[in-house]
Picture 1 (tube, rainbow, N blue to C red):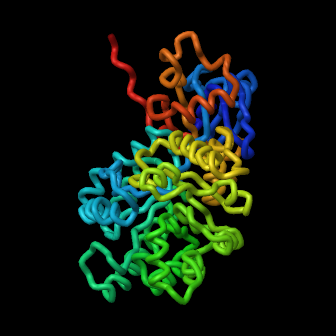
Picture 2 (cartoon, rainbow, N blue to C red):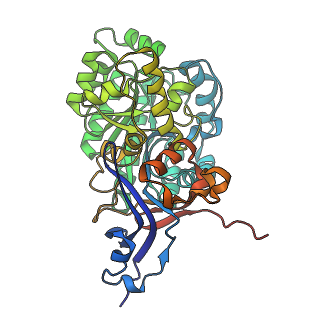
Picture 3 (cartoon, helix red, strand yellow):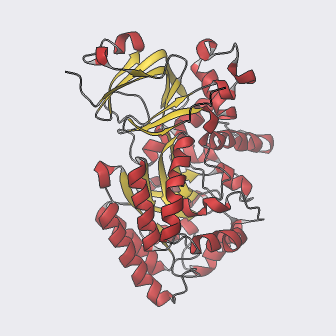
Length: 445
């Protein structure tokens, strides 16, 4: 008897099991049962697997199947002010971000969060680590939308007790923020078998007291939850932190002293780090969220990616919406490459990543950054089926007429997507084998 949970996907399978190495199976297939990949390989082999003879295969040899893309740092409430020009980070926060976050109440979250998750899926992103606002109610509403969306989401209420936009004095904000964050974590962390998880989210050391950061770190360890914050994005920000914590030798040392570093800590940007800071991050196995589109848009700088990787830092890619101007991770991959190319023009010895390496960072590399490399990121049997089905025609010249991917290598396909990919190429997005987005059918002529 055919299992109702058995599903088959057919297409050109491409994943990146190692940095710089692509694995491609032309006219390949995935057999999925209860959301898990139970067979992967050439279609003619997979279709002979037990039970596969009765499966209705989705998609075709003309489709391209890739693991879902992973965005390790973005801000859900900020999307309405995406691409607002400002000269630098701190003025941008004051003039654009804090006002829109202040208005992101529960009703707004109920309206906009479902649209945000749909936008992620439409871009081929299946897993994202996100910030909400300082408000418990709107964060709770965003979690409800995440649960309904079917997406793989890590989310947290922003914590800040200095310069906050909430209107309460710091002495009242601190205990309230801790209480609300713990309550949200108890409610949501690990929901739906771990598809929904919590991240304690002290915004950054510019707006957080030492006590708040210490307590956030303790709560994260208590619940085995994530920590997310920002680090060394902007020179002015670094100077502000130096003035706030003069007894500590560096920005990273502030986080170490507060217990915010560790395997489940994801730190956005990390552009301007001294050698001792790099060692602290590497020794603690903390994660760097590389946000090249945001770093360029806000004039923050260019992260020396090759040096951080050589030093052993764990790195994932991130849109950093709304600092980054779009949710499209193909453009983040492109900026990852081109920002390092720019460094190579004036800095000798820079190693520029290939398109295959950028793709690895956005798939298995992102999974490893979040501690999920055994769960998602490739098409290995036993992993959960987070998959994106793509149509190359929209990103090829002349809509792909006479130029289908049968003549393209995996490297050529991924390069085409890195430089031209986006929502127009996404046919369908799956999380745990369940469809979370399907492109509308073209209108009949």
